[in-house]
Image 1 (cartoon, chains in turn blue, green):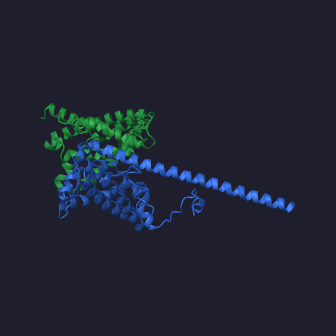
Image 2 (cartoon, one colour; image 1 turned 90 degrees about the vertical axis):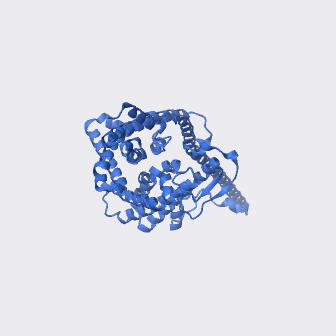
Length: 259
Length: 202
């Protein structure tokens, strides 16, 4: 059994089926906008003081990115190449205006706490990047799925940063303060004042937490790479041994024939 | 008439206390992307200064002379981003025409500025919650210009300091998984801690 596992060629990457499912999930880890491409760092640093503001920002980005991808993809044949970027900016700005007015009406606390970063969704490199590199070349359905998946990955990253910062700065995770939930609870209440590191909730914390998380992910990626390298070496050894075996058998056979 | 103290307060607070990069997290993308070499960091800062001051004037004027009288303040996002994008295009063309040398230095940074949140962020805070919004139209415009200049100075200061640190970090013996961006981010965090100490001066 173990031999069989080694015999599988690890040099050939597993063939990724280009289905809509991989299209959706690629933004989660493999092409995560924040941790892999470092796109949209401004909101990732500024609005992740708590998990909930991160989630709120993520929801807005999900809406804007999905709809802007759909519209860009619908209009891709009508927009001349020369005015591509201004046209995309106007499309994105329209959706950001919609989202800004909606949050002001239905989630006023969120609107106040995100502040300037709602209009700044316009200049989020992630949205512009998806519009130019994906939606302007693909059909409507896959563009929508791509935008939704990328924005989900963005939201997940924001929430991960937010959870880390909130736990360490206040020792608990509150829900219902900024988003219009009908309840207001704190889900994880560690009551651990050891964690009372206010710095991580402040401006410096954003940089430090993202830096540490990035280092952890890089270390993990490096470990995986090393493991794959070891597997590759083992596979090469195995093949060499098999070839030598075959050669010896052949030699013996020919020697037997000669005799 | 606005007293000179106000200008002083505006410039100090926008440059040091509310530093665009470290305290308000605006313009982090160029801060991380174009800070590998001191030379390019300074080029970027100059281009940002140029565009930030002009775009602050233009957006302030457009907001108070066009959007407000017609009661369409809510489309300010679209208006501002269009102003900034076309301004950058214009500046690029003008520099290309008048000074080949300057264009060589700033040319590649100008297109990047459109997606620099610092420009839009400063323009927005000038009309919403900044110091400039506390004054009437004429005085507010002056304060807005000074604020934008101070913010750009703060951006330049941070870009210069950070790129110098990064040049040193390149030769430092950093653990493998911390190389590159992670260690730079933690460095920026420590810089932000230092800037926290400036809070409360004004």
